[in-house]
Length: 302
Image 1 (cartoon, rainbow, N blue to C red):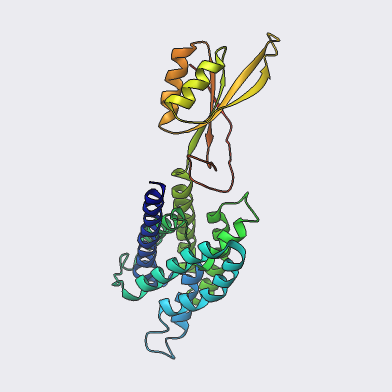
Image 2: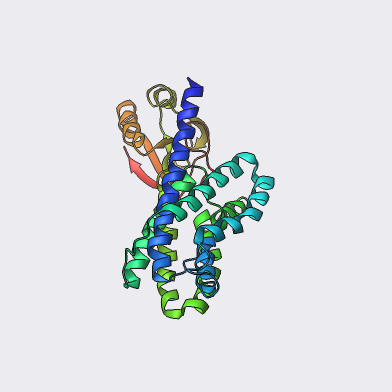
């Protein structure tokens, strides 16, 4: 059964990578390249090279050729640092993106409106990048570079690192296509970052609960049996009463937090529940990510 679930999970990841790269290619071909807008990444470099080579080759060097050629060194680095499984998905993502760039029809979705190009392109590419990373892959280029860097700078998100790298590419694009288009490209880069970051973190959003109660055993049993979640007991002392208590800590998904509060209220109406956002959770029962970040808690009386 585990093998079947594993196969299904892996298939879903590959489908997300394929769908994500298709959306990325749509934004690159039909929005950014058609509008002469460089938004960063290896695709941005490919657009610059295509424009600069039009006097040498009819139509310029195809985007997919440049995109694939630039990624070879990164594949070798990624293989060495992150292992074969990371490179395997990166290789699949890169082949999928280059294939989409080569075969996908080109539509000028935004026409001559650079603002629409920035809005449409930013949202479409942001969703595409988010799907690729949710599938555990990368398309190479600056997103692979960002994934590698993020292993050492974990307090920055992948999307934030990409934003810095892409800014350098946009500056080069400004020199080639002019400052007017570059200013709109900055809007697109910002949207790509926000949309992809929101998609990546939003789907992994969970809730952490601290429960101060006079009935810790009953509530702990409820969490483990009814919610099928782990729970940890933390020794605590009420400074006003001077009494020692056992504070419970658990992490549940967004849907389960409502049931948790209702069940706690049934068992102990006098309990205090402190709920805080757990933006990323690593461990059994949750999506595997690198670290857990807790925001300031919201105190609820249940």
